[in-house]
Image (cartoon, rainbow over all chains, first blue to last red; front, side, top):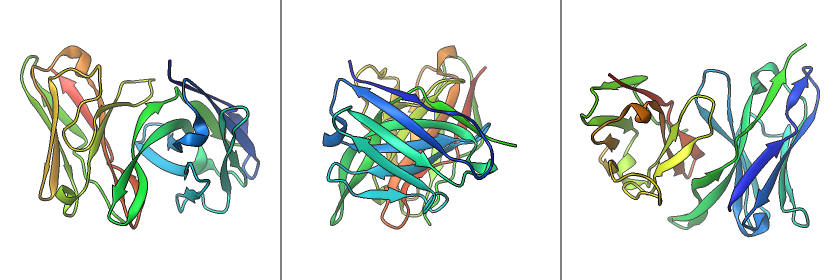
Length: 125
Length: 107
């Protein structure tokens, strides 16, 4: 069965750090594009970051320079290292498997077909 | 940056047809995808690439996309369809973009 399970969320003070994990089963993380998407309390979905199968990484402007997406192929696990956390980073963080699409000359993420249940990050003093 | 506009809420009578619009500049030239999210749960893909249903999604769910509006249509609405629905696309200047979400109420 294809499954994603996030962990690592919790309460952290502003300026602190946290590393989220997303363990995959039923497919190989390194062969897929993988994303993190977050949802602040009572708000909509916000894309955070993606890592391509080739290793390229991209970030939303709101987290660029503070968050780092990575993966451990041996553990079939995706990570999100979050530094310099702010109150506005408070959210449920989902990892998702991306299906690839072509957009003109680009091969990029198209949509997310598998989602984890999410892990909650609260940034507060 | 590219923006997708959705109404905050849509209501539909039980058994009738609900239509949830998603507006964007020339959205018809992009692939649009739709997710259903029930309270406390992760999003679930219900329509991909404008009008395709993943396996396990009822035929009552359909999609269309033309001009400046993409639409998710839910026929014969059921109480279990009450949820938030999000449209999404990929834009060359912005990357992955989600609409703000629409809360569907079945009366």
